[in-house]
Length: 171
Image (cartoon, rainbow, N blue to C red):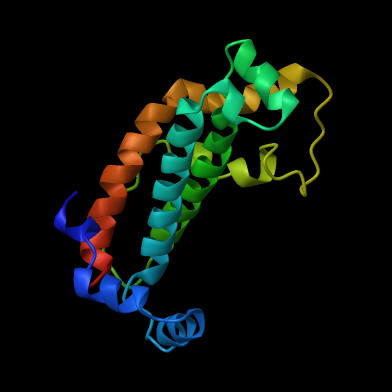
C-alpha cells in the first residue's frame, strides 16, 4: 500500500467512536475534496476488483443461487459478470479525464475510444435499445475488449488513475 492509499488512523478511530448520525453529519459537513470525482470512481473500481477476487475464491457451497452453483460446477466464474461494471467505471473515469479543463492530465490510453461507448451497448445496461438477434451479436461486444485484453485495460487504468490522482487531488 502506497502513501496515497493509507488512511489517517486518527480519523479512523474518531469515526469508529461516532454514532451513525454523528458520522453522517461529520461527512456531510466536510467540503468536497479537490479531484473528489476522480477518487470516487477510482475507489469504486478498487472495490469491484476486491469483490471480483473474493467471489472468484469462494467455494461452490458459499453460493446461494443454484444457477450460480451450476456455473461454478462447469468451470465458469460467476464473478466475470463484474468485469462489465469494472469497465463501465473505467470508461467513466476516462470520460471525465477527456473532458477535464482544470488540470493537465496524462494522455489517455490509445484504445480508450474503443471502450467509451460500452455503456450504451453492453448487456450490463439494457436500458438502451439493443438489437441483438444472435448470440454472436452479443459476443462481438466482448471481442473488442478481448482484443485489448481485460488485464491490460485494468493495469493501464490503475497506472493512469494514480497519475491523475497525483495531479488532481490533495492528499
